[in-house]
Length: 150
Image (cartoon, rainbow, N blue to C red; front, side, top):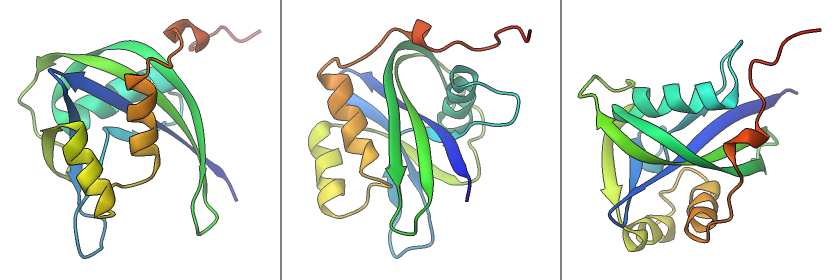
């Protein structure tokens, strides 16, 4: 079984967090930070900038790295998820990824209520928000992308 490399981004503005709403085949929609898989030939920083724009139509400025979150699903799938924090810089007003039903700027209380209803995509959603709010971050320079092959 392979490990899935993913990225996710906590984006906060005026006390609200940018969340995406997705239909994942269950009875209710689920909510997540902008997130997705790292594509071949791409590093985590390039991947998160692409995913945020595709899923939210926002451009962002990355301000920190939350770290690597290892998550194993009940089905036994292993995800290595790179967490980032960012601030919004420009709304592009472009079409969203077809998997995204809507985007929402939600308060911490609204996100907690969604968690209580089991409508967050994974437990990592709240974990990343907590780390961002507690400023448990690392500089982006801990990630080395596009290093020369020797």
